[in-house]
Length: 568
Image (cartoon, rainbow, N blue to C red):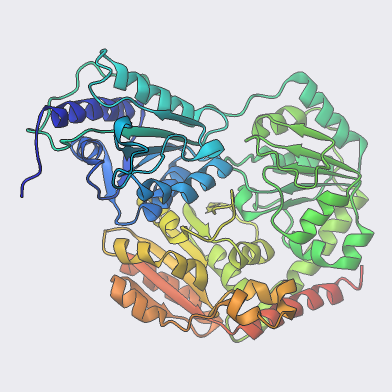
């Protein structure tokens, strides 16, 4: 039976074409769409505008994270469109991550018209303000045709685009109700007069004279300080030089964009060495970007006498509420402006002590990693980050992979590291990595087996769709992180927390149409990566591991670093 057609469908399509044309004129290039009836006018408008790359996903949750990956990679809003009902709720996790990681996202949810809400109509939930405080801006739009004034949809698109990029950037939600019939009687007219000015991303505010002078005073008056760089949406390379000039060691997480020469080689290993950390407690910490990931770094921030946060994206990155001062300004601009005001302290005894210990700890870490014949999570993380050519992007999953990368990655240039560190969930990881890869360039991803399986539907749907991605999966048959946490003493550890799955990942990849390679020896990883990139498409490089070995490896690393440092 043919779907009903009529003037309502023509009006709806015309309005959505005006909306989409204005978004495209603002800079929209990519949209993710999932199948559904109520979203027909919106889906057709996106698909029929040849300037938009439309990525179709069966699962709205995967579509949301794929759009998130696109937006993370480009810094530009991507759109995700869905039908009404629980489809809109499936986007919630991606909206949360976008909000907390400051990623611009356009969330376009189709809905029933107002007269069908609250009366038991099929596939109807309350979608107005569905995402609550996680949406930077939310609007329940009128039904197309109810507001006939010229330019309404054009203006609405401009407002949505601008609000998604307004500092700090984030997701915006347009709820778009449509009446039946939803199918137009023809292709629809081209929108007229929809040229729109490009809206550039609004960066963090520039520092004022008072912020520059205050930071210069802090750095200049205290010798025993440390710079801790957490996740940053935009790297601030002048922070490296500022730390060197002040004589403060720089400990930079990979997702900060500052794990480059000049940062410590084994900073997290030093903080985890209890006697060294106790003997080298700083008097002040400048925390740049998000709060630290590791427990030892968080402990430093919780106990240091003076904590300042340089928080360009207004993350309020102070979980212990210890910050003496929070600077919500452009990190690069502040570091550049402060440089000339800080007297050089290069060669200070404080910095040299950290550098000597860092060299010892790095040698100890590498010696242990290279001494194992079997693969280990830290060695895979170290070698993967080192082997990717300049210009590559590495997408890393939460839980153990991000921590192992922080522990083992050597500083280098030419590698961008991304992760879903806003809410730090494992969900949607494969979709996010695929979205990053769809933006272009050489992309690899590092994942645990549970992150991989949690989002395996995205692999099954997208593996044959022309995206190039090498996904390294550390498979220890469950959540090994719980064997390193307090839950390890519980009798319910295995069934409630580790959740072993016993699945054959090669069979999963075969069903999805993804390539698969098995790495059984640590030295075989580089060759496997080269083959995977040469093959193209979605390639999974599986590294089987024993969970007991994971615990043993981390204990050996800690012991080796402590022994090499001589207890302090």
